[in-house]
Image (cartoon, rainbow, N blue to C red; front, side, top):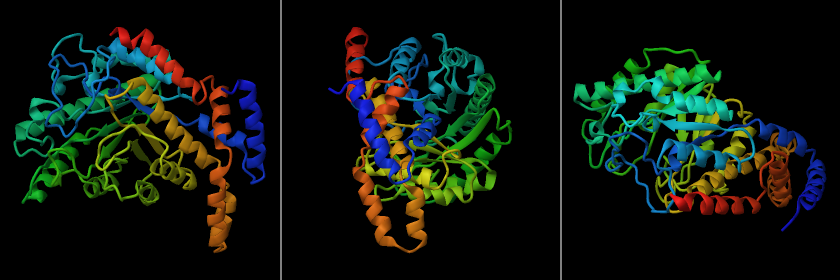
Length: 422
């Protein structure tokens, strides 16, 4: 295995190769070090949460498969696991919480009654660890969501319960943002939809809009919290109709000044989410990405460095949108080491960003503007074989994080010392 000196020597050679194309690896690494991903807490315990009533995911449109040992059983274990994952990911990153992960002290607190105090220990812990928090309403895995409808339910009392829940979540987000002196992004996804043919789609979407209008009637400073809304193509139990479709939330966010969330697993497999980025940013100041990996459907597989992720991150850089787009992870796999899943996914997104930052954009743009499609395509092909891995390894070393291959042993050691004892 290569030693640190060998990796530094490889980086020097790579730096010179990129410099020949007028690409500064130093500038690329400096920009990469400023990017923060939001890691999702729900990978650590298979979307279980820590509510006293322990709701089942069945009927929520979500499904976690696998029985790999060692999942977090408490807030303390989840935070311990997160700390280990962060130590293996270069850079400074955020944590994305769901409302079902409150510190309820073993008490039953229904979701329309949650308050900032139930997340104070998270705020305290995040402050100690130098982390910023993001937040999500949890509109699934609850008796009031058993019908498959929440904010669009025809029963006003059910809608009222979920309206109050989301209102409480926004207040919690604002408290988090104030405590951390950084806006907390509150994202809203609901499972509302139908398994089979739905006749009056308009009525349900009208109810959803009315619910959202009531929720967002309360305003908060953008310095404390920002709102995003997440669409979906279909889910388990909503194969034929989803109330909060891409078109619905596109219209709602653009007309209300909210942020659209694009989840890479929530579209047809042949759709390019990367292509949607520039289309949205022409009309919207900011955008939220939930980076996932669907295999044949919205299956939330662990993110890897595949073409979809590379294209997505390249679009952020090419559009000059790194300061306007917020990137979060969203997947869950109970069939493998959960800390390893976090690290694989986060490092894959960061690698894709680095690849994009190392593109010789001025040359590529010049060829495009000149109509020289041959040189544009030839250059895009040739940069695929540049020694990107050496630059990535150097970045990990400079951030005090194990480079590729060596980090795997750290995960296995933690599994032996900690996870196997649970």
